Image 1: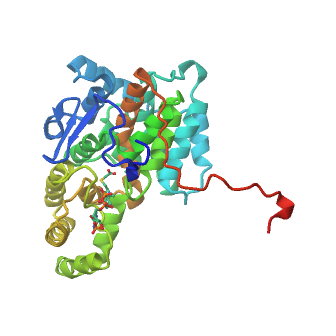
Image 2: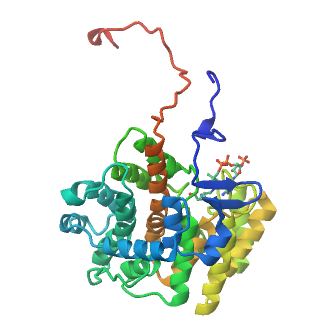
Image 3: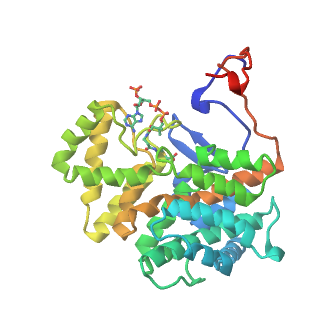
Length: 374
Ligand code: CMC
């Protein structure tokens, strides 16, 4: 390998995994053997979480048990709530989330603190993320404190946590599908970061803290916020063609397009496009859907690029009234299942992840004492 550098580790196979398969040429995404289209059509987020953690679909009893367990784990330790309350209301929600996940390791009651490879920790984190976000955003929006609401599904609880209202059936299903689609994606940057941390035998909370920080970047989880900013700048469908062409002529990237692995349309974008239209029709507001369709047409014609998952998700969250800076935290609330499934897999077959670099600096410099340096 000496002398060969794969920048961005593109096409480098780093490890074996049984969790997620992406066929970038066929545009297929598989979780534990199941096609994402079947899961998005027929399953729920809790079912998919079970599948990713345990490697098989749950029975009805196993699913009911998991739902109950996640609902029970929604209540945060008092110290953590106080920690969240001490953060400035102007903090970026991803910074608040990263800080809270890190603090969870300290504030978990000693007797219930999960071991490094325990699936209990994965469930605790998954249940806690909507509560953490809800605690933080409700204070800044002057909304009442959050209640555990055990009767709500994970998707409905997330909406309630963020907006202090229950979603309609259609809204809850749209968020449920979005959570299913974001739950895992092979060795994406944040999952890789989590696995690197776990490979040092560090704990689950540290691994997820690494992952949250990595997801924050605009080339990864932050792209959907930028898509909505772009739509705001374009304004109306009749301005889209000229606006996008000018952007491409300036060699600027159009967020929500292109992908390192998919060479055709990202299957998650196909499913979310349908949900963007369905929700828009139900609310009598197809503005974003029509604008996005025009942008897709122009970007594909001009650059041959296809939409990725981030193109349509923001339009769905906007139709529900969710503030833009919460889009990436919603992504995290789903991907935490994938991160923890990968960390558990890493613990089972642990090998310290430690690549090498190609050193291109000098090696034979003569040491000059500090007093003699100019
Ligand atoms: N808009 C305009 N041009 C693009 C775009 C885009 N969105 N994506 C790629 N290109 C062009 C790029 O300029 C380059 O052109 P040229 O060869 O003429 O210089 C060519 O396509 C190859 O680009 P690349 O950056 O080498 O490709 P990559 O595999 O490193 O990029 C990517 C993958 C996702 C970073 C990139 O497509 C991008 O920046 N997209 C916009 C950000 C985005 O939507 N991110 C969400 C990704 S999906 C969710 C997730 O996994 O987190």
